[in-house]
Image (cartoon, rainbow, N blue to C red):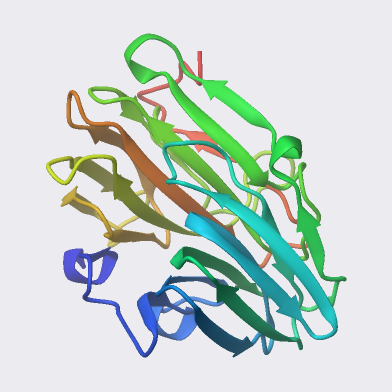
Length: 270
């Protein structure tokens, strides 16, 4: 189970992607993530097929052409520097990413049913939330959360955790359909560290017999799959800030992020 849930940097590379997680390789139905490095002057084309995608600059800027529309992304220096603008690519579309100066780009995706229009997401409109307090404080960038940006299935947010802090805390889950209380969501964590010496520990504990169970040291470029179970905390090494991108999607009738806290940790995000 551990080897399937924790994907160290490079172990899930495929074709042009440094990281390529699709529903088939993850063993679930919807959530997907790709990470693409482009050299200066580089281009990459892809067909969205039956999935919707958000192109999110991790470092650098680019243009994104979606069928006949062209979008310019200013991007950012790094994931620790600021929020970024982004582009939504609908299903059944042809897209091209091009970068004059080069950069690294995430493609957060989800298999979906509806075809929505291609759209630009401006950085100033990304809601930023300070979550937790004390040594559980972290900053959440809700660029494609369920209540911030319209998608059919995809939910995606970024989290920056100061060194020494606990994030994804208290432990929580979203693996049961309980209307108004909890939604079923498959989740991907993708990690970056501000310093090469940085790392974190990620915990997933079972919410059911035989469920997901993981305690892993995660480093820059690693990914973790959360098909079910209580996930959290994610613990950042002191003195080294941590970034992770969360990509989620599920089969429920509504696109919503509803979670249950572990019964031994009921304090919530105080």
